[in-house]
Length: 293
Image (cartoon, rainbow, N blue to C red; front, side, top):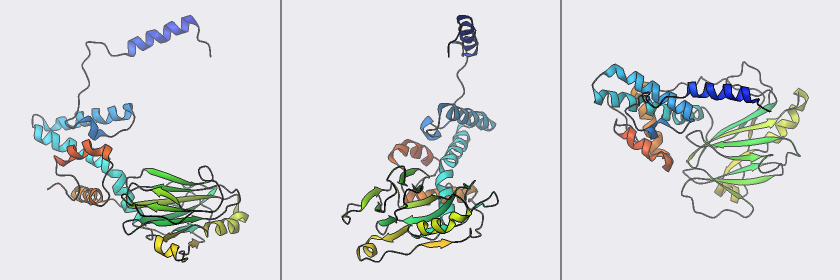
């Protein structure tokens, strides 16, 4: 698109008017370091910092209270994802995939805004006792994806048509620090945490397609490495409707920070978060800890 010289001059003029002057005051900063405010976009991070700085002014000239408030708020935003993942995955069977061979509609609340053209598979893996082997069948070109998320809600791997193809395969999902061998032909997937949230989707064309989709989902399995090596794969569960599950309720107050402290202890945060964790520690928030009062 060509911009006429006159239009360009107008745009430049507007940009100069909108730009901060050299003499304008810098935006107020909160009491916590920038590293404690996350790694979101500059605009969102700047908004968070400005709101924290504005809100902590209620404590006036009490720097200790201001720091405590700002640290608690930053730690809450940081901890919301892992605490929510923990509360969500506790509703699922451990080390067992469950698939739902059913069409969805807006009334389904098991997941947020479910697709209408895919069925769902969910599961929680705990890798502390050893790797889990994920088996997927040959889907004959049908789209599917198995999304693997860590304890902090970060997606660390996809198995499916766009990444690994649609042929049958076996994948070892291994915990941090695992250095053992794997059976021939099994592909290794390194998880950053012991907790893994599995979220699968399989293409569903229409209601008449449900039997074929159910057969595909019956081939999604997770099995302990030793049992898999012994030729004893774990069976899969395929239900015809979404089960009724209690709504996810997050802990509040000091209980929230206690839950975060437990997660940080069992599934340590990535090294890139070290600066933020040092900031949170000043308020008694950290691995195995919770602030008093």
